[in-house]
Length: 395
Image (tube, rainbow, N blue to C red; front, side, top):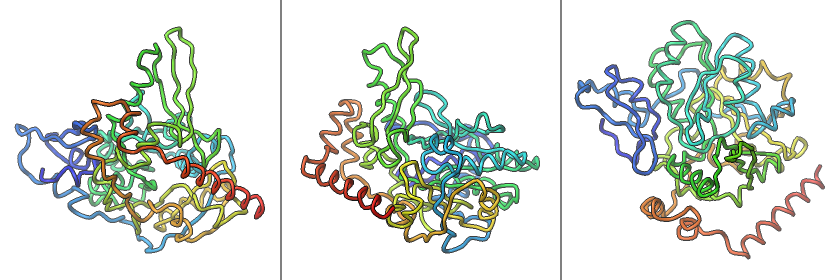
C-alpha cells in the first residue's frame, strides 16, 4: 500500500476492504494505528489504494448543501445532557433510531487504555457511546459489519470522526447511498496517540497500588466550559475513588490541546471542513454566549449542522425533545474553527515523540509545551470573568 505516514489518518478503510485479510491495523512506535500488509496474503489487487479516502476523495452520497442548516440545541432531559459532552443531541438521535428498530454504531471505552467502535442495539448500552473520547480508536472491522447489517435490511446510525465516516462510505461503495444508513461526524480537534494516553494512565497508577478503570474526558460537573478530565480508580483494597482535574490542570488535556500528540494527517484533514462528509455534524457551540445568549448556560450546548436532507429528516423527528434555535454557520465557526479547518501543527512534535519514552509527561510539558506565564494566566482569568459578567447582564 503506497501511502505515507503523514497522510494516513488511521481510518482503517484499507483493512476493511481487503478481500484477502492481508491488512491489519497495528500501533506504530508513536502509538498510532497504521496498516500493516502481510506480503504472503497480498495479491496486489490495488483495492486498498482504490478505496483509501486520503488518495481518492469521498463525498456524501446524499444530496448535500454547500451551507448546512445550522442549529444551537440541547436535549430537554437534563440527566442525558449532563452525561454528554455538549448538549446531548447524539443521545436523543440515537434513542430515536433504537426506538425504530435500528442500531447505533459509535466509539466506546473497551478497557482502561483501549477505545473502539461497537454496535449498540438497546438504550441500556447507549451510555457506552456517550461523551467524547480523546484517544485514537481502533475501528477493527466495523465497516464490514455495517455493510452486512445494511445488506440484511437493518437501519444503521453510524457516528465517528470525519475520516471514519469517509472511510465507511469508501468501503460501502454503491451501498453508501442506502436509505437505511445515516451518518454523524464530530467536530474533531484531532486524534491523540494511544501511547501517550497509555503513558498518562501508567503514571497515575505508578507506585500507588491503584488501577485506572475508566476515563471521562468531558466531565461537566464543574461546568461545560471548564470541563474536567475524571478517572475512576480502584484501590488494592477494592475501594473505588475518582481523581478529577479541570482542562487547564490535567496533563493529558494539556498535551492534547497543544496539538503536540496528534496524528500527523490531522493537521491537513480532507474531511474536517465544509461541505461536511456526514449527514449530521455535532460539536460544541462555544460561541453561544455571543450568538444566542438567551439559551446559553454552563450545562452544554451543541452546534448541529444538518448537511443533507437525510440528516435534517432525522433531526425533525426529535424536535419535541430538544430546546433549539436556528443559527448561522459563521457564528458557530467563530469559536470553533475545527468545523472548517485543521489544527496548526505543533513545531516541537517530533522532539516530543523522540523523547516520549525518556521523560515523564510533566517533564515533556516543561520542555516542549510549557504552561503560560503568570501574566498570561491572569489575563485569561480576567477575560473569563468579564465574559461571565457580560452574559449575566445580557441574560
